[in-house]
Image 1: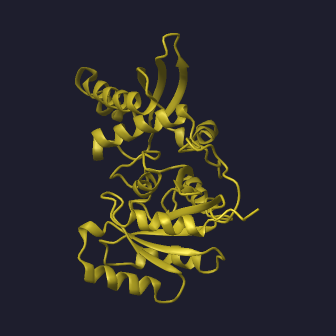
Image 2: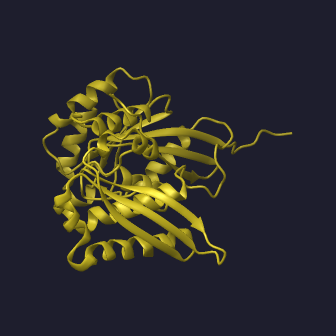
Image 3: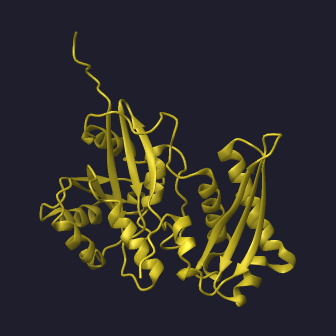
Length: 302
């Protein structure tokens, strides 16, 4: 009998950072397919979502967390709490930083919070495809100079540069142990919740700054029909009546475009024909609705 030279490994990696650092794009790149929605709008990720990446005999469970920022509202507080909870008992913490930014004082509160943590910490400078090499090296030196980070990686989550090297290193760091998820599972999110997130991504993409941050998409029903197609009903919730016209568009054209784009992506993602039905609801106090927090996987904090 000989020892297995490639024993199974499995561990948790928390992916932290400020809003718009590219955390979700990086998690998608490491997993090898889309598991988290991506938007240029800050604070797109709301709940902690687990992406599951495979590298050789290692299963890397990636906690894609909401961006860390100064919370003002109940939803903000719940999101920041979810981010830090994602780092609890992690085998490694990856701090993702937008490599294009020269001023780094916005990171001070995050660095202070990380300072006393026992987990192995890795600094990831992202978006290197949009930045000259010398400023990146200066940024890395500033952030890693105090010895808080054991390693620094330079990546572009968008183009994939540096991602294979990071993935290989994370696999090495995972402790020996059985895999927690089946080989073909890429996320812990239910298809019902993922479908709502895909629609929310299209909402942000197509309305840009026209629609304020205080909107969400609630899953209402998810039914597999006898012919194998999937019928999905969702509710777009907005905070003010004045926003309804923005979401609907002239003659309902904008809502139709959002639905068509979401339906197309869901058809590819789920591998089945999708019938998507959307309707808009105005609820000024949805940000205080405990049930919505439970749907999002967030803790309702006072």
